[in-house]
Length: 361
Image (cartoon, rainbow, N blue to C red; front, side, top):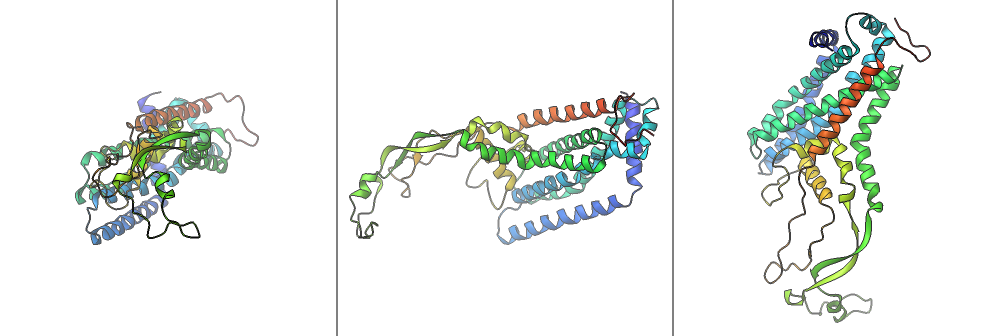
């Protein structure tokens, strides 16, 4: 593998894509869609008299990542088998270019196009920074992690384009793989709850059942309005048996999700507080939820006796763990490297076996 060979293949791919008229239209539609959603979000928040920065940041990042999962796989899902059907791949293989030059060059060209889509969206992330409430580190961090996830997505499509002879099959398999990462990880995580749940004694500070049993009841069994109203003095430290779900045993499924990785990678996203949240922030909610899942079942005493303060223990903040995005980055690094290695291996010559109906040149 050589830098000159990679640059040659990437330049050919980019020149070929630039000659088509559909990409400017797609970029324009992308820009208009992101601009429309961001503008509507800003208008809604401006009327609500809250800082628009955090919500604009989250909505824009969530939208860009969601659209990328739809657009980016098409950049490489038919790259190799499409060239094979057109007889172009065999011509490249007869030159001094190595299989690594061809695959990495195609990967670089597809990633560059993906970065163009990301660059078109970056002004709206900067708009969120100008609106206030977030730091420039969050914007830069999101862009870097988004760029990395897009590179891995391109590698997945490239691998499937070498595994199948038909472009339709590789496109379908690529989108199924992306859907598995986005939706499948969450579905498996939720369905695994029954595997990690158990009946346990839970501590709580609240009103004992004996207090309610001593109150006057109506004929239908409901508490009479003339009954004594409970106060802090009636609260006790108690235990009861409940179903506890130990998500700390299955949290490792979540770093496989690209939305979790991008949401959790932004600095300063997970500190809960009364002033750290305003408006709808989907990425912040994803990050807090993922870290709470890693922290697992909260064994601390639950506060169920809140009468406006005074006398009782203070409510504890939500249980949080450390960042989980490093695990996601390692997973995606291994996934992208494995997909690239497989694509290189599948394009080596001489070809020992080809599917029926596949042309060489």
